[in-house]
Image (cartoon, rainbow, N blue to C red):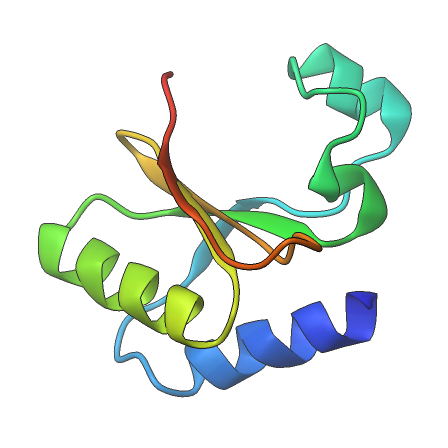
Length: 96
């Protein structure tokens, strides 16, 4: 499952014309707790990344591609969380 996620991220990266600045990817349980992550975080399973992105057009493009390729997106003010949850893609809005 992890390899599918990484392959999807690379596929998306190849289609955008801006850098994907990754704030967070895989987290050990200690780091996940320290940053306030939930116990069953997709970050702990290597199935999530957080991408720093503020430009509205870039955010829209990355969100569209992520959902197109089956990833879920949680939109935060300064970053997008992308993951490949088992129940299919969703678009959510988080708080920071």
